[in-house]
Image (cartoon, rainbow, N blue to C red; front, side):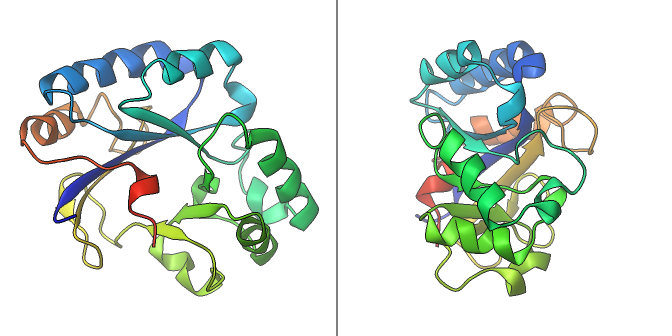
Length: 194
């Protein structure tokens, strides 16, 4: 899997789907149809119509879960049962990978994920809280777009759909475009879980 590009974008929802999907369609074309991207979607803000639009692009897009409604610290407030409820509601429309909004969750969330055989995509600062049997994709501490990961043979392309974190799809489009033109293979987050 030497140096495959793992592209993931946070905060996908109905409100930004049109622009996001158009840009990803462009990147897919430029990449000679090798692009793959995992969209971490906000389930409470993502309709069946948007699911269908992503399903029609299943060759290069997959949906994973990013909290429920993306409230500040929502996953720090959940218990085991609340996490199970969200996973149950999402199990049919999403890949079984969960990313807590703002990288904040508690031990009960991680335990529920492991018990349900889901995986987590997370920040390296949370490594100590992760159950040993929880499959994971953990970003490198410095996870700029196009940067090699220190622990896995991959190139990171983590960003956001919106332009509010310095790594938004539009504001960092040239970086994503350079990766699409690189000729390297892409991988979904689900393909690099450890």
